[in-house]
Image (cartoon, rainbow, N blue to C red; front, side, top):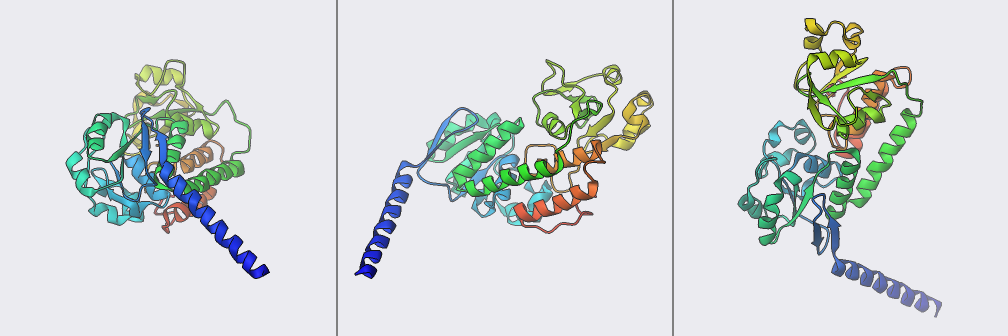
Length: 330
């Protein structure tokens, strides 16, 4: 009798769970994207297209590379794709920040497509074809974290997203538990030395999280700002960080007009790592950029050897690839 009762209870629980699952599926998934649009899916997407690098690399890092049926143009230029999801290179190239191939996307037959807000004009066309469209606009750390949560919910990767946020918190708690020094004045340049990172930028937040002070974060200086040499000399930063792919530290050191800068005098000009992907832009690996920046500013607190170890572990955990310090540029 007891066995029969236990069996009946087990059956009832299974039916109850099945009913809950069915109810959740019936309710569907609703999110508000970063274009302010409400998007509803019947269930987590199984097939996904992306016209946006930030979305694509995040999907890969959350373990969803097999879901992708189409990606942005020039995928072959992304080392992280070659290393972690090489099959993406054979998928249809659907667009870039300025345009999107709606018909090609329809042929790829995704349940949902991720686009930057700059391509919002294509959302209506895609949805007329029955393709749910999610707009992303991760310009700050908070916005990128929200984008990760949106992508995770749409793709059914919420547990993976929780793992990432827990990993990042532990990383920062382990290495960045020390007082900031106001003398750590940092000038962050774009591809051109006189392109300065102002307030409310992802790069500025990487510096802040590394306990640095953005030298060009005065009120009103938002986004990338064009400045002149005189302004840079007046800022006189202790450190200069450069976007990878533009001006080099050697070129800065050789510039006669910059010889009075503290960063030049003390040889404190560095290029952000980008062997697999840039560490100062919105992506999962930007937490490594924060750690690398802290090692530059506070070598007595964070060693570059620790950054190398954590980077190797990060790419194994989230992208399932084995890399060496040399491959990462250490």
